[in-house]
Each structure stands twice: as structure tokens, then as C-alpha cells.
Length: 289
Image (cartoon, rainbow, N blue to C red; front, side, top):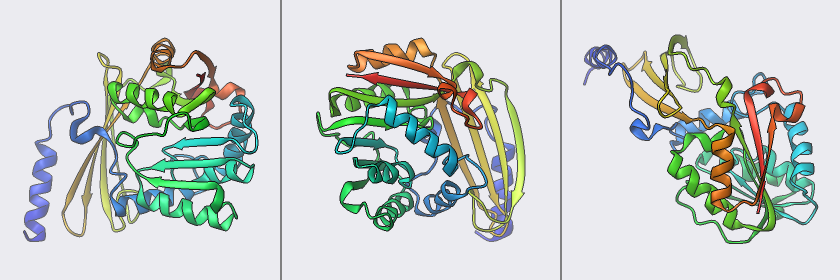
């Protein structure tokens, strides 16, 4: 297909798009495992000008100190970092004396995490696994604590989230603790909206592109759905990504955690007062076996 035909086809697809995407359409998640997207996402993780992918160094240090205290961590204990990204938390916990296992779906992130551990001299204390956490069997009673932060539990369906909580509970030793960070459902943007922008390089491509974004709120299922259409200006190719964020009330999440096998759940709104730029948007749950 020549470029002009590709452009016409892409524009026709945009024009004829469904009024609202269905929840979990096309998997409802970002293409974390695509090597090119994974590499571009890694750039965002490491960019200190914003905290959209990973929080900036100063905020991350505050969280690590808080997690150390709230999870009752000590040197020699074992930590499971679920959706660990490029290992920015995992390697710091290893430097503090933990044995850390990190799991992530992004090949560029896992490759970087391995290199980061080597640069910090903690290779022997870190294991990084490239895997979809939904498909991986967690070892039973192997960890003293686990983290599932920056809202990543929300990108899975309710049934998948329940299964992940159950697997995580079973992977913890008696008395082990899990920290889950989720957006506060009361503060989630529930208005339908749209936006567009152009860029020469960014998360959505390495050459000039037009990004068309739409956000929808599914009140019945309490899901925020974003539809991203990216038109690549040199080729005319159109990429379509639908991202779902399942939200939960605190009552719902506490119930899910206890059903999964956790005996106690503590709830900390706004990151327990930590001075993070977006702290008010989050609820942090610490649950124990």
C-alpha cells in the first residue's frame, strides 16, 4: 500500500471509529512487550523532568523509606517487586540489604534493571524476570514482602486482579506484607474528554506523529477507558491502543484483599502525607497474611 492510500485508509478508520470503545478492547493495556514501545517507555521511566512513568528520584526515595518502615523490612529479607519496571525501586532495596525479585513485561525495562543492578554492585541480590505477571506462577511462601505500586493492579480486569492478589498472598511467608498503590476512585476524572498533540519523537513514535486521545468513563463498571490513535506522518500508518483503568472503592479493595487471603488491611490515603506531587490522587493499601 502506497503512502497516500495508507493515509486515506487511516483517516477513514479515525472517522469511522466507534463512538465509545468497549472495556478491555484489544486487551485494554499498553503494548508493554513490544520491543520498540518498551524502549520508548524506558526513556519516560528515566526522564527526571516528570513523574508520569516513574516518580522522580527525590519522591522515590521518600517512598522507599516509607515502604521500608510500613512493610517491616530488614536486611536479609526477600521482596517481590511486581511490575518492577526498570528496577529503580528494586535496586535501591537491594542496596539496603534485601534479596529482590522483580517481574515485568517490558523487555527494555528488564534489560535496564539487570544493568542497573550490576552498576550498583547488587547483581547477586537481584533477580529480574521478563514475564506477564498473569501467566507466571509465583513461588509459595518465598517472600517477606511484596510491592504492586503506581496503580498497575488497575490495568487488569477484576478477575485478573483477584487472581494476582491471591497468587501474591500465597507467595508471602506467614506475617508477610503487600503494598498496593491505586488511584483514589473518588478523585478519578469521570468526564468524557478528548485531546490531540503532535511531536517529532516521544512515547508514541520516533518520527513525527499526530496523537489523538479520548477518555471515557464507564460508570456501570467504574472503568476509565482511554483510546489513543497515533497517525505516523511519514508513513500514514495508524496505531490504535485502548487502555483501561479499573477503579475500586476502598471497601471493595479491602474485601478483595481479605478474600485473597490477607488477614489485615491498613489504608493510607494521599500516601500517608508524603510530599509527592500527586499524593492526593492515591490510596495505598498495606495488607498482611
